[in-house]
Structures are given as C-alpha cells and as structure tokens.
Amino acid sequence: MIDPKTLLERAAQLSDQAKGEEDTGIRERLLRMAEHYRDLAAHEAWAHENPPSVGALTGALGSRAAH
Image 1 (tube, rainbow, N blue to C red):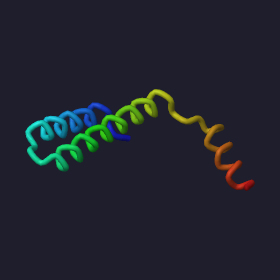
Image 2 (cartoon, rainbow, N blue to C red; image 1 turned 90 degrees about the horizontal axis):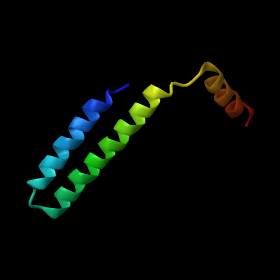
Image 3 (cartoon, rainbow, N blue to C red; image 1 turned 90 degrees about the vertical axis):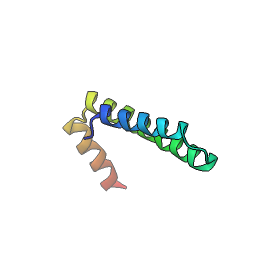
C-alpha cells in the first residue's frame, strides 16, 4: 500500500512542472499524469479506510471459480 500523501505530493510536483512547460503536448501529458496520481491517492485512501474482509475475498474467489 502506498501512502496517499506521497502520491498527492508527486501529483503536485507534476502539476508544478507542467506550469513551466512550454510544449503543449508535454504539459498535457504531465497534467494527465498528475491526475492519475490524484486518482491513485483517492483509491489508496479508500482502500485504507475500507479493508476487505476475509468473507468478501473468499466470496469473490468462490464466485470466480464457479464460472
């Protein structure tokens, strides 16, 4: 599990880097990467707050095996 704070810091770095980038394509790519890091941070924060239960995991694995 990755610390969401670390991911958000990286997103901020990429956004700052994009502000100084003259090439439009590179700037857009950096902003997309920053958005991806923010999405990952949100996912990691949610996963930390909502850990999977053993029952949910075995249920998910059992339903896959039945198909």
